[in-house]
Length: 279
Image 1 (tube, helix red, strand yellow):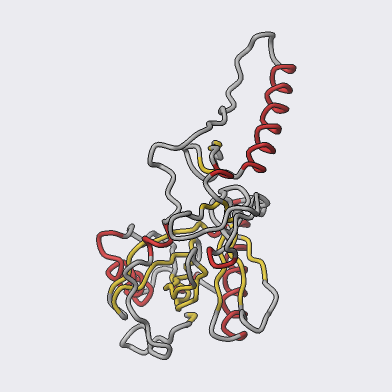
Image 2: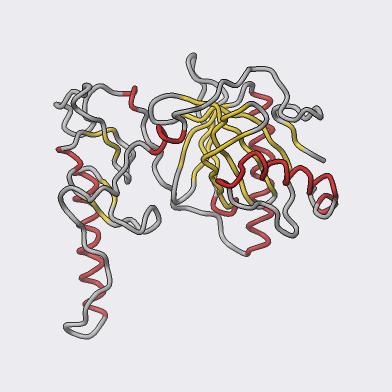
């Protein structure tokens, strides 16, 4: 599927074109053996609204970013190692079609394609690349995934206390453990979730109690297994407001200056279609 493309000039040119579109803000993408297999625009469900995002499928990573200038400039580059990816098909509704979830331990989010055929193409190619990566690395499939954030528009009240009503003055927040939309009072606590961040992150009151109870149990088991008085190395939960490191608006910043993206154009002037998979 990919071996014959690995050292070809066309593959090098395709990867160089992607690097050029992200510019200095993006990471270098060219590596020995890396192949760009396909690219296209998918609709990503962000915190405030669904937005178009450019996606590039390589044989070992999935890259996506915000669209600034049609066919020329992207920003907010995200790189996801494919061995960490699990896909989940989502049910069809009248309002939402051709959707699936991309899940990893650090971040999970929903995307949708323009058609069922396009969705199936993306899913089949990604899953094949994931299988190859797992075989190459010897890793088992990932079983721990971050909860996707529930969009702001899904609720007008806090999903924990069900009392606080959101407004221009009463902000929505997201629990990093369950993804629920919660008020400030129901998300005062912070807890260290190493797979998400090296710093303690915002969690809702219910998740905090569950995490703290789990930590106490693990701490007791560790103390029981070790020498009396031996210190444990589990991170302590933190209460109260964070010192500016808790940002609920990363998706908003990511797409705050998105350019318009026509519904039927080609990505490269050379004629590569929106969702093209190379062979």
